[in-house]
Image 1 (cartoon, rainbow, N blue to C red):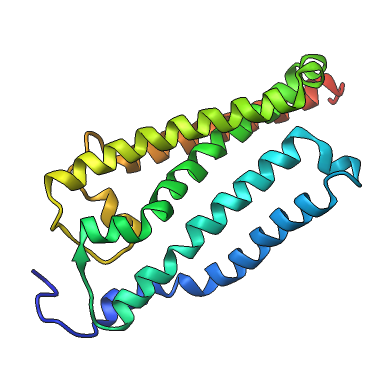
Image 2: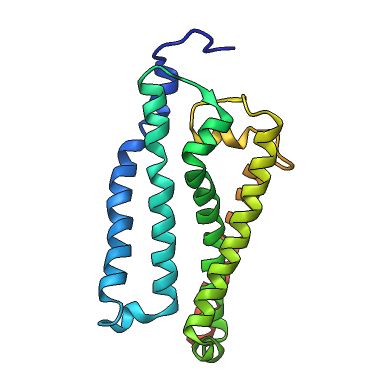
Length: 206
């Protein structure tokens, strides 16, 4: 094993410095959540379905970015590796929220497609029903990923990880989650391209 000797290893520590920009991300995303919650009933822009979805996404980003501190602590103190089961018990929320945030790239893209392609239908859909359905889909996806990870970790609970998300992607899971991320992001990009095309077409652009 490359890092069999315990102690501080610069090669492991440097990637954990992603924690530094995460501090900024934590503050900004927490601000989005606070502003949406505090001023939701006062400004029309914050009453839209999309603004609430953005706030949900920001909340999940807060969970995701907070997990970077575990990775930083493990590598900075020279612990280097801990069993996958212990890591998941400590930061399982971070791993799952990261997957859900990535999934939300797609669901929020679909939200934009619906708003542009079917504006009348989008406006008529009841606000609470739309948000609750969106949350339900996210919960189902989170449970699915949780079950996959628990199954993989149960097969090898002592698998050494640093606490970095990429380590969990290396677990013997049913499929490579990195490929899933790629598919989700590609579909999100295609959805945004479709939004641009629809906006140009419906706006009468040349």
